[in-house]
Length: 445
Image (cartoon, rainbow, N blue to C red):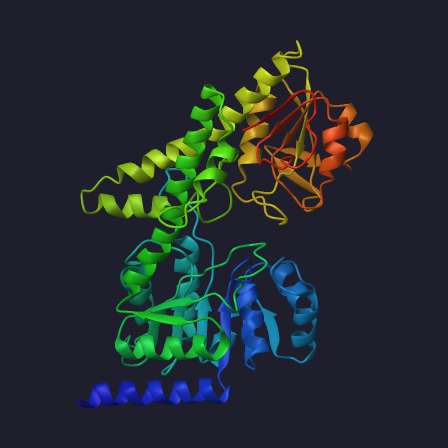
C-alpha cells in the first residue's frame, strides 16, 4: 500500500468510526422535499445535524420546529429541534463543523429543456470554501450521468484537496415518493456510488447507520446517477403507454380502467400503470430529459423517451378537448361555462403543485374562455400567470353552480358521494367515482 493510499484509508476509517459512534456532525444542503426528511432521519438516528438553505423562511421554520413537508412528522421535527439535534442556517461557514454533508438541491430544466445545474454548482462552491480533510460529500440531487465526477469533483478540488485522498465524494440518488404511506426516506433502499472504493465505503457506512433500507453499492457515481434516471424513465414511458391507451379506448368506446384492471390479473410479466391528465412533480416529467440531453453528447437520439414525453405532455390538451365535448352534449359552449376543478396538486393527498398538469389544463381552458374555480384541501391558494386562485369548499351549492366538474386529483378528502349526487356533469380523469352511482352526464378519461 502506497503512503497516499494508506493516508486515504486512515481518513476513511477515522470517519467511519465517527459515524459508527455517532460523533460525526452531518450537514444537509437544501431543506426541501428531499433534504428536510433526510436531515430529520439523521437527527433521529442520534447525529447532530446542521441544515443549510438560502431561504431564510425555511431556516426560521426549522429552528422553530415548524414543519412544512408532508413526509415529515410534526412531532419528530419539534422533538429533535428541542433536543438541539437539528438546527438550520443560511451561513455556510458552519460547514467547517461538519464531517459529512449531503447536497439535496433542485435540478430543474431550463427553457430549452436542458439541465439547470446552477443550484448544484453554487452549493458545491459553498462547500468547497470550507472543505476540510477527512470530509464526506454526497450529491443526492437527480442529475445526468457524469455530474458528480465532471462537475462536482473539479469544483471541490479547487479547495486544494484531492478527491479520494483528502476528502470523499459519492452520489446517492434521492428516492422520495410524496404521500407514500409505506415507503419513506428511512425504509427505502439506497444506492451509493463513490468516486473511489473508499468514497463508496464511507458513504455507504453513513447511510447504513441512519436508514433501515438496504444500501446497494455500485461501482461509480455515474452508475448511480443513471439508475435514478432509468427508474423515472421507466415510469415515464409506461404512463405514456397508459395515456395512449386512454386516447385509443375513448375512440373505441372501451373503458381503459376496466381494461387495465383485467390486464393486471396476470401474475407475471405485467405491471399496471394508469392514465391521467398529465405528469407532475419534480421527477418524472423532468428526469428523462436529463438523459436525452446527455445522450446527444454520444450522438444518440433517445426516440422512445422523447415520444413518451410528447404523449404525456399532450394530455392536458386532450383533457380540455374532452371537457369541451362533454359540455357540448348539454348544448353548452366551453366559452363562458364554469369548470370546477377538484384538485390542483399533481398527486393525491399532497400539497405539491410542481409541474402539475392541472396548471396547464387551467391555461388551456381559460384561453378558450372558460371560468375556472377549484377545490383542493391541500392547496389553499396559488398563483399562475400573475393571477391568484383560491380554493373553495366542496359543497352541494358549489357543485350545482358549475357547468362541469372535473376530477383532476383524486384526494381522499373529497366526498365522492356528494359529487356523484350533485355535479351536473363530471369528467373523471382519475376514475375516482368508480364505486359511486354515476351522474347522468359522466365520462372517465
